[in-house]
Structures are given as C-alpha cells and as structure tokens.
Length: 230
Image (cartoon, rainbow, N blue to C red; front, side, top):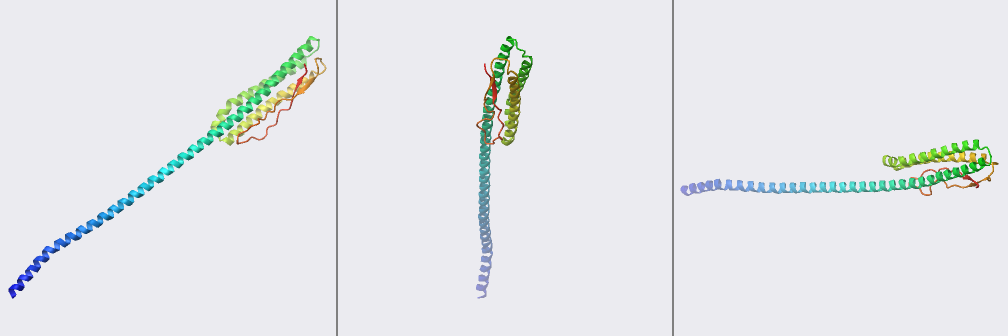
C-alpha cells in the first residue's frame, strides 16, 4: 500500500510540474491578447481624432478662403463704384470748364467788335485774360485730381478714398467758381460798349447725379454763368 501511495504522490508531483508552465503560458497569452485589443482601440481613437483635426482644419481653411473671396469681391465692387463716381463727376466738371472757355471766346469776339468800333476795351481785355488764367487753373486742377484717383482708391479704405475724392472735388469746384466770378466781372464791365447786353445762361451743376455707397456730402453748385448776347 505504501508503494501505491508513493507512486500516486510521485504522479501528482509530476503532473503539477507539467501543468504549471501550461497555465502560465495561458495567462501570458491572455494578457497579450487584451493588451493588443487595448492598443488597437487606442490607435483607432488616435486615428479618429487625427481625422477630426484634419476635417476641422479643412473647414477652417475653406471658410477663410470664402471670407477672402467675399472681401475681395466687395473691394472690387467698391472700387468700381468709386471709379464710376469720379468718372461721371469729372465728365460734368470738364463740360462746365469747356462752357466757360466758350463763353470767354464769345466775350473776346464781342471785345474785338467793340474795339473795331473805336471803344477802349483795355480793362476788359485784361479782365478776360485773368478769367482765362483761372479757367486754365480749373482745368489743371481737374487733370491733377483725375491723375490721383487710381492711387487714392488703391491705397485707402473705401471711406477714406471717398473723403479724399470729395476733397479733390471741392478743390476743383472752387477753381471753377473763381473762373466763373472772373467771367462775371468781365461781362459786367462790357456793358455799354455796344454789341448788346449780356444775358445769363445757366450752366450744369458740378454735383454728380450718382454717387457710390460711401456718399460724399453735398457739394455746392457753381452758380449760372452769364453769357453775353451776340
């Protein structure tokens, strides 16, 4: 019996020695499996976060591009409005200056007829020369203003550009008004020298009918320019 007991104990010890490494291997394998699962989940979360970040960056980039496009389009529209405003304004001012030139020519013709009839028109001719100088000054002011418009629009905000354009408009109309007053003095001085009395002929307003969104303040109109009768 002792022999059988000894044999059973020996078998049990042998089996325990064989089973322990197997159990240890199973535990190690199980631990590695769960570790891989955790790592895969972590990798997946990181990948999803990266995709979300990339998506956010893409949306932000597109939004910035859209804003830039809208701002550029708005700037182009404002530039066109300002350019159109000045084009119409300068055309009106140029026509007004041309009318003053023609009026000066008619006055000169009348002075020549009066002088041919023996009238002394020395003072009137001097006044007319002074008026022509002022007309030339108005034309130069208009040309100088037109030459600045592109730079003003490019290098300023629409509001600032409109203020500067309004200042140029005021400067030109001031020169036109001076020429107008000089012509009036000449016409008044020609009364009584023959050839008929001068009659006033209204001129076009110096204020344009259309203005851009950044509207200028109202500019005074040049009063009617009198025209001598022929």
